[in-house]
Length: 289
Image (cartoon, rainbow, N blue to C red):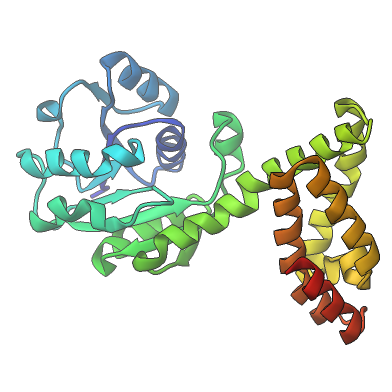
């Protein structure tokens, strides 16, 4: 008998998973509960299956429950599900937060459910694109082994790559994604601001950055981080780094701090690369400290 999944919260991520599971026939889409009946109906329309409801007491029973609400509401929704008559012993309950662990589902676990967290490392800003490109997405997984035995095949069926992680380090796991994705955007903004200070307008700065950033990202994943590092720190050129740091400090102390910290973290990569000699790298360390 095919398993059924119910949704508590169903934003872009929930719609993506629901659409993929429905299309592949991996799961029967059951009840969809969101903040309003209208948004639940919209989610059902997007998925192509399911029953919109506006309160948990209207939820039909299922074997799997996805709590796909905002992070700050997961624990509350877990408690509401545990307090309802719908949850049964052995049912699987999971959420997809990258920042929160499966421990937030303790209320459901106390009622005999098996719990987990499965976090797709992916942007869901564009729903159609997220659905079309989900295959190959890495998903950080942690939780009850019995829950993962139920849920893992469902994610594998839609093309996910599962990556076991430690629940106690979930915050660091999510921070790694934030640094790689979100802060990459911020770093480009810092670069653009610095170009503008030097007299280059934003549009021209973007045109300059596009091939540099694209090429650098390709090098990182083709060559590795140490071999992809170029520029004055890779060469051990403390005079250039020193003059740039002084100019940054004179202009904007906060951005100078960013420059200095990133430079300090780049020195070990330069040492691993081996282009600059030890004396030059020692000079850089003193300067950046």
